[in-house]
Image 1 (cartoon, rainbow, N blue to C red):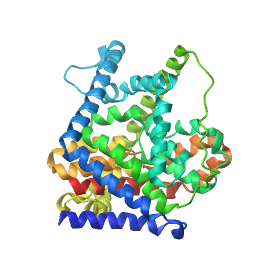
Image 2: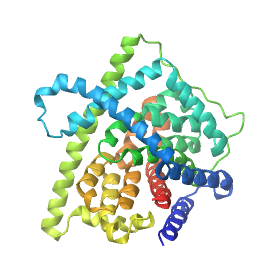
Image 3: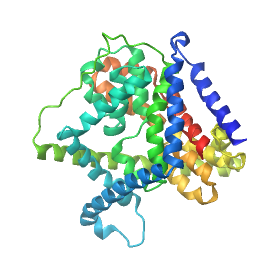
Image 4: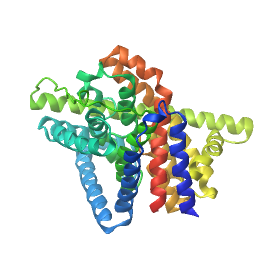
Amino acid sequence: MTYIISVLGLVVVLGLALLVSNNRKNIKFKPIAIMVVLQLLLSFLLLNTKFGLILIKGIAKVFEKLLEYANEGVVFVFGGLMNKGEFTFFLNVLLPIVFISVLIGIFQYVKILPLIMKGIGLLLSKINGMGKLESYNAVASAMVGQSEVFITVKKQLGKLPEHRLYTLCASAMSTVSMSIVGAYMTMIDPKYVVTAIVLNLFGGFIIASIINPYTVEESEDILEIHEEEKQSFFEMLGEYILDGFKVAIIVGAMLIGFVALMAAIDHTFDLVFGISFQQILGYIFAPIAFIMGVPMSEAVKAGGIMATKLVTNEFVAMMELTKVQAAMSERTLGIISVFLVSFANFSSIGIIAGAVKGLSEKQGNVVARFGLKLLYGATLVSVLSAVIVSFVL
C-alpha cells in the first residue's frame, strides 16, 4: 500500500508541474526519467545501505567537529551568557554559521570550491539536458548560498532570457547553503539533511524541465564565472566573518519575528475559533502530506509543519518538528525532514529578487514578476524529494 501511495505521489507532483508548463511540446522526458531513477538509487544508497550509513556518518562527524571548533569562538565571546546544561539556539545553532562561512571563504580563495562547482556542474549538464550555466548555478547555490551565487554569474545575468533566468532562480530556492547545513544537523537527523541536498539538486532540474522546458543552443551554452577583485587573505577572512555574522543575525531576527507572530496568531485563532492557526494549516496541507507517504493518522500534524515552513522559514518549521518528533513514526519523521531542507518559502522570493536586482535592475523586476511561480516550482521540488524518500523508508 505504501508503494502505491508513493507512486501516486510521484504522478501527482509531476502532474502539478505539467499543469503550469509554459511549453509542453519541448519537455524532454528521457533526462527527466533518468534523473528520477537516479534520485531513487541515491536515496536508497544513502538511507538503506551500509556504504550510505558510513558516508553520512563521516559527513556528520565532519560537521560535528566543525561545530566544536566554532563553539570555541562562541564560548570565548559569549561564555558568560551560557547556562550549563541549557541549549541556547542563537549561541549553539546560529553563531557557528560564522565559522562555516570562514571555511567557505578559504576554499573559495584557494580555488578549491570553484573547481568543485565547475566539475560537478559539467557532469550534471551531461545528465539533465540543460546548459552548463544552469548546472553550475545549481551546484554553486548549494555551496555559497541563494543570493551570493548570482554574483559569480553576473557577467551573463543581464543577457539571460526569462526562461533561463527562471531555472537559475528555481535552483537557488530549491537548495540550501552549505554554511547553514551544520545548523540543520543540530535539529534534524544528518542523514535526512544530506539526502535532501542530493535529491533537491536533481529535483530542481526535473521540475524546471517540466514547468519551464527549453533547449540551450551550443552557441549559447557558455559559462562565464565572475572573479572578484583579488583581496589579501586577511581581507577575505574579515569579509566572510562579517558575512557569516550577518546571516546569523538575520536568521535570528527572522526567527524572533516569525515565532512571536505565529504564537500570537495561534492564540488569537484559539480564542476566537477554538482551533489554532497551525491546526487549520495542518488540515489544508494534510492531503499533500498523505501523497508524500505520511500515514493518514499523522498527516494533519505533518501538514501543519509543512505549512509553517512555507509561510515562515525552514528554521521555524524544524523547531516545531523537534517539539513533536517523539510522537511521530520514523517514516513520517524522515519524509518531513527531507521536505524541510530547502529555501522554498515566501521570504525567499524577496531575497532572490533583491539579489538579482542588486546586479541587474531589469532582471530583478523579471524575477519579481514570476516570484509565485518560482515558489510553486521550488515547493514541488521539496515535495518530490519527500516522495522519493518515501519509496525507501
